[in-house]
Image 1 (cartoon, rainbow, N blue to C red):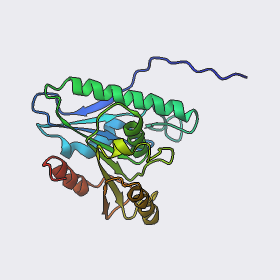
Image 2 (image 1 turned 180 degrees about the vertical axis):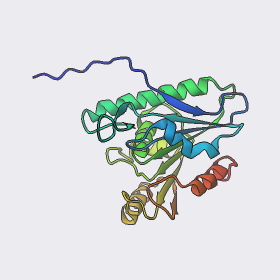
Image 3 (image 1 turned 30 degrees about the vertical axis):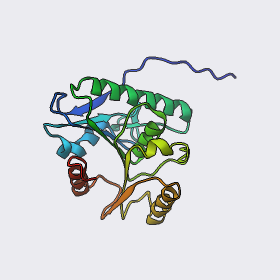
Length: 221
């Protein structure tokens, strides 16, 4: 048996809060976690929407039924099957969304903030590392850099963005020890970052998001 690959056109979707116009100064890309849909995930970020902010929620390219065929629909960014092809596909997809969104803005000097939650954190990490899009602030929420990213190789790109790591102290998937080890790894590689630990679980915390938004839209970061 011989495996063959073929590139095919695919219709992907993303959701938007706000209208592209000359007042937009900040663009937020928010990437969901495993088994979520972008339109529902975007509801967590409604507080970011304002006359000078645009919020974009791309959706993972793999949709499937949760649990059984009459269950609700969810999406994923990738699996371990043909993982490198999946990564290349979604990096290209995110670059295309980025290009399409920014092309609609009269002012090209906008600040681009990217939030990746859970599996979406690994997704945006690879996007930063392998993609062509300029990211000003990268926020990994309830996530860490995936082990396949060579931090030393990606160091230049990482130090061209402001990096924030956010995790709940009761996160079911990232223990305090794991989070501390990851921070130590970044420090050893001289990667600039800051961390926020909040009282909560594997979730988007509204008060933390509000604080982060205030900092990133008033140039206090």
